[in-house]
Length: 233
Image 1 (cartoon, rainbow, N blue to C red):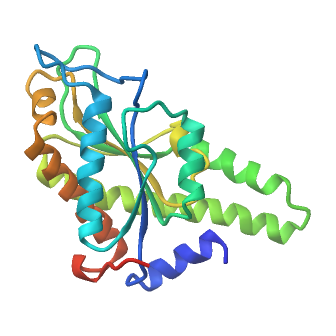
Image 2: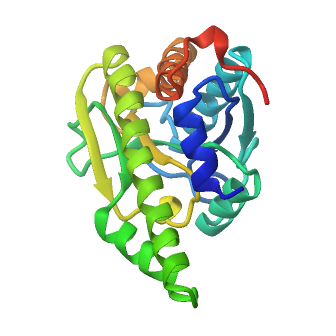
């Protein structure tokens, strides 16, 4: 059964179990953004801590969770995508912390693959198909996943914005880590790690747990079921 059909069944029958891939951004030699003060919160540590808390939240609610990394290790963007697809997941969330040139911005936002990226992926996916009908189905599959990614992004962003100050909305971007993921996929910026106060907040355990709960609530909202009914496959 193709991934697009599995996703259609998930939408129609939200009691179906979820396998969620969580991708803690950066890692190893790729530290990401660095925050202020003597503590200097580092993006790679914030993303891993939030991802681990999110894994516990989702597993507590019954979902099956796969992490692209579980320690401070470097992964290429392509490897992250391959691990997501290899896990035969239902959803993919890449966790990041933001930064700005003047270090004054704060807030949360959720990204989906840009329309241009989706168009290229649809064309590339269908290019090798000899049957025009099959090529059309492949393009439809890519666009279906893009639509579901947008729905997931809205669910996650709504919950996150209710938990953290500064709703920066759902946006599009040509992020490589979202290119080629064969299930609904979003990149979540959980805050600005270089902001004088927000950066220090992101390093706090209770804030990380609150973000994780919000993200888990968004996943459950997307699935269409109350938290208690999301069960392991």
